[in-house]
Length: 67
Image (cartoon, rainbow, N blue to C red; front, top):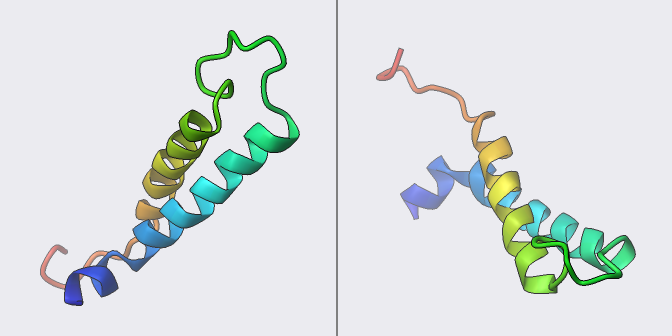
């Protein structure tokens, strides 16, 4: 449980990124099917969750031990 509390921004970013990735596929997507990321909903959802996790993990505060 302590691990999840320490990394709550990362998990929040993964969730928001997954929703945003699927929304991008659903509303914009790729009509030709040649786009690597947006041609399938799984690809865009995984890519969005990865990018969201990376973005939100940059907002994590450093603890007193790391300073």
